[in-house]
Image (cartoon, rainbow, N blue to C red; front, side, top):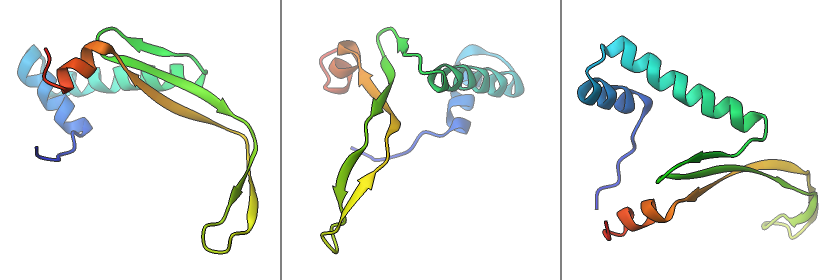
Length: 98
């Protein structure tokens, strides 16, 4: 299994190859979709993509952590984290069950 990273440019090229839009239109389309997803997540909304998965913003409360070098306890501030939950369909595809 090769470990490669797919970039925005790769996504734009894939849209260009498969949809038939110009390279500029393909890049604009990819940027619009990613921007819309990001804006929804900023507002705390869940983004659910059928047969792919859901991006969920979760709030984590303040807690006490520990510095692994010194063992000193330090407070970890409350924050929001982004979680991706893959759909069953995507899990099956990844595991070759298609």
